[in-house]
Length: 147
Image (cartoon, rainbow, N blue to C red; front, side, top):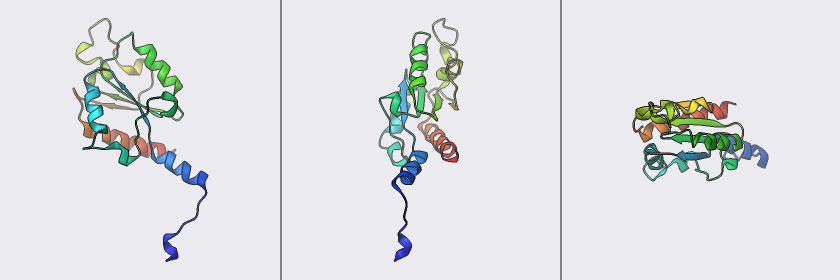
């Protein structure tokens, strides 16, 4: 009966939970945001994996940039990234976030979010599949717990 009991401190348990969970800040800029929202909905349910979407960059450690990034919104995204907790991770979701996609020749479109912030994982597709986002989040959880 004593095999089911273990002792720990509250600090150790809090650190373990922090290593195993990611709190993303959603930057849904265009059509790829629909796929990101679909991933957080009931079919894939990211909450069960410790992935809780946050509205404040000061509470987030993962930024998911999904959609077309314009030169007008780029400084705001950089500002949000600078306010995030460390260690921080970035997922670029969709061809438009990675390289400008269909709108790469438009003068108002930034050709890739990696020009202003470091990107950890790129998810290709137009639109990318929700399964790919779940796989990327699992990979980042493994990276975070290894740190």
